[in-house]
Length: 390
Image (cartoon, rainbow, N blue to C red; front, side, top):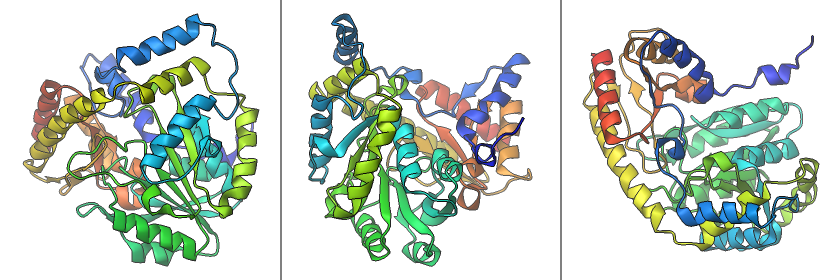
């Protein structure tokens, strides 16, 4: 039977690679999973008050469809959070989604026609390119200096065409941990304004920052056509509950998408109401658990980056945010980064993700690993990787 060309172009290397790991496990080898950025799987649970809010909502009978746009009280709290980062919006500009991925799908499907181009940071989180392709568009990667955490503005200018409709940003970035500074964000917004482009900015890791203060795009947005994607999976440790949101800047240029995108929310009915009450509590309740989480993860980052840069044939920039390292394979005795990752898995039982899965132009020749596991597991995994590359 027929399968659409669109769906055959969808890839998600982070989970696709797990199939190979299962085969290795079937042969009796233990696998260290360093592929998925899910803090909850590694013991970082949401605080008790947030868990209790979910339970209480269920027990109180809050088990029906919510408004398609999301619970009003939650949208009001989200607006406060985003305004504290620089935007000036109300609950009316917030739409609650089933994770950032659904929000991204809604936004991309709302702005893409067949053949339209979307600029993505190279490398970037795989669903960006996949959703663009799925909706008939063409993903175009632009260069980012991983050592200085700056986008290559000249490269972006050279890649803007009459078909370009949007510039996507992920800051802090997955897979590199790059965090764009205020000046870079300002340049990107100005560039988008010059060419009448949407700016779609994913800030899901906005509070997982190690060395410098985070600057949200809201601080430089003005009345530009900026759309922010964010959620509760990473900072608020609610990954399995699948809740995120879209925040529309108050820009006259966004009037049409603000009118039409919510139709997609209505078509899919709603986001889980008990989970929305948990998200509300995660914003209103104590926030100290976030700093404890980030302090612990910084120790993991420091160990992993130090170890990687001591290995022969490996170099790795210091990520300033999120919880990923993106080492470069300086001396790859295998044909591709995917083969490197596969051989590392098969011989040492360490599962990472090939860099080309995050974009072939700038991701090739790298691999991504997650430094969420315990320091003991990370140290052991680093020993295995060092042995492998040596």
